[in-house]
Length: 451
Image 1: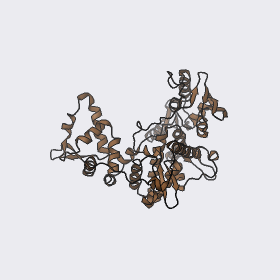
Image 2 (image 1 turned 180 degrees about the horizontal axis):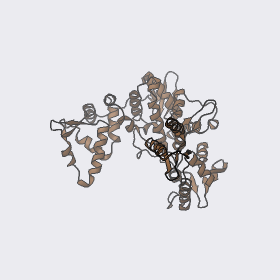
Image 3 (image 1 turned 90 degrees about the vertical axis):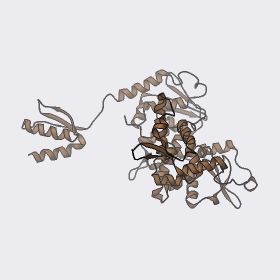
Image 4 (image 1 turned 45 degrees about the horizontal axis):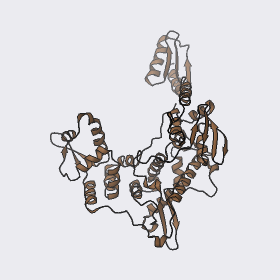
């Protein structure tokens, strides 16, 4: 079974991965500093606030005394996080003892923020100019529709409504690890793509944003500028209108890409154009636990493996097809069953048993969510057994070599195969060995040289 390759990470993981010079450039913005501070684990946040007005370095040994011995592991995690994000900078004296000092840019911005108070990155347009704006429920429905359209395009372009088109930059993001295409063939989902579809919405969003930022340099855009803009966007007021004229050229291109994903809604007035942030945008700088989806589930699974999904979404139906047999679909109900064939099909596409079970638990209908267990035990046990049964035998293409003219020649071949990682099995009595199939040309060349 393949390893899970799709990992849900938020923006702070991308910020921590930046070079020190780029990270210091980000800290020129008070909004970035605030976003980093509120994303820190509780203990790391406490350390940052304690050090906010301390100008001299503090010895690492002295900091260790701030916590009890049983919390030493949490202390190390907090310090590591602060160092990764360069909130703390490591300092060594002549005796090579380690001390920590706060990043000067971060410290200065946060001191100013606490004294003077924060302000929005840009002021919203008054209602007298925009007129009536979408209600919060309408904005949430718009964001959901755009995101589902995006995912349907990923699963099957024929499911997407006509007239929907995504920019070339978004299509490139689609293909970065989620889709694969060969010449003359339509793009297909990769193993990562199938796993991606079972992830929680905000985790999917962070994955796409991470890929979008990673591909920025290919489009001639500085990734640091994109990260800065996206983090600032999370501080905008939900449902308020902001003028597009306040954006730079890079930000204006990015905002149109984000509108396709449902992070913002674009509107055109008589004289001005504006964007309206949705809940997806305001969640960008939050942690995974803080922004986990609170929407109601829709799946009821019975002990006889029958499945009932109370949903009108085409996307839900397509996702359920990944691991179940959908029998028929009513206007507000999808009826199907989990079978050995459907689960094996999911395994072939790189989906694991735990991912399927986790999806069923996270999307359980409110009527069954309070039951223990949420998903019937016989169903979860059977899914795991099917996965175990499938993994009992591993097929490895290989080549058998036998009829060696001498014991010495056989041992030389075994040593060569073993040293280079080709060898799978050997029988010294009968002078036979088996090597991996992909290394047959190299082994054949070695045998030819021995002659």
